[in-house]
Length: 120
Image (cartoon, rainbow, N blue to C red):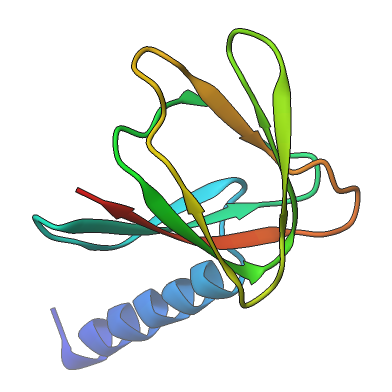
């Protein structure tokens, strides 16, 4: 491949990377860091979006990069709401064994962006 072709490929890849960072995909879970002690990811939920049922076996810190209300529906019924203030951290305990929940952004206008730091 010519140098021009390689340069074009690099520029195209960087352009795509910039667009992905600026406009993350719908209900994105973006891995950020992982080792034996901790796993970190960014969650982006646009207005009205939800994540499917899942569970967390470990406690975690949630830092609101763009805050708002997060609704957490439980598989067995019921739901709880968290008011997440931009720039503030919230601790969430591990889920009870066998209990699943989802995540839902009930806002009609605000995107939630959260950094999640899960202990191992």
